[in-house]
Image 1 (cartoon, rainbow, N blue to C red):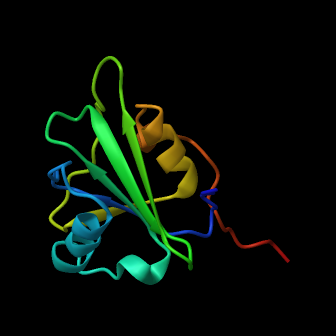
Image 2: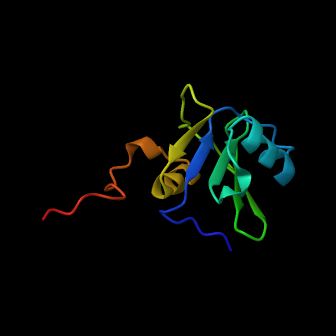
Length: 117
C-alpha cells in the first residue's frame, strides 16, 4: 500500500502530460522534463490538460505505484505556476490538492521549527 509521509519529497509537474502514458512514460517525463530520478522515492504528481485528473508516480524500493484520480465533477482549480519544471509541496498540501482544494491556503504549522532553549 502507498503511504505518503511528511518526510517524502513531493514534486508537482507544472505542465500537463499526456495521460495515455503509463509508468514508463511518466518515469521518462521525470528524467527528461523534471531532471529528477524516478527511483528516488519522491512522489511525482502530474495533471491532464483539462485539469480533471491527476496521476501520482512513486517508487517504493520494489516497484512503481501509479495512482490515478479523476474528478467526477469540476476541475482542479489550483495548480502551481513557476519558471521551473516542477514545484515542491509538503505531504499535507498534497492531501489538500488531491481533495481538489487549494494547498496554498493551508495554515498548517511548519514541518520543522527550532525549539527554544
